Image (cartoon, rainbow, N blue to C red):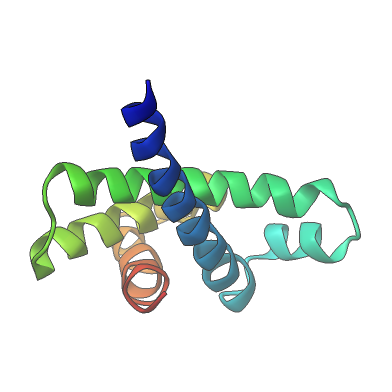
Length: 119
């Protein structure tokens, strides 16, 4: 049980940190209306809820990185693309609006490069 707890702690911390970065870069910098509206409304539950959602996305992207040993550019691009598709396919359903073009922007053009790569 101790090994499981020791391994889970850093992973959850990495997911929360990645989720916080994704929330800022995807929800605020990219001007996604719903998270911004929730954050500025004064509702105390909104930031925590969005942080948990984005942390879940970051955790999935990190599981792909860790599980497949993504150390090169291809693995990192796959993890970033997955994060972008998760964000745009669930929080903001833009990915479903005009395929195949909507699969590329903003999922890959913004989230893979800016949210995952730079963030």
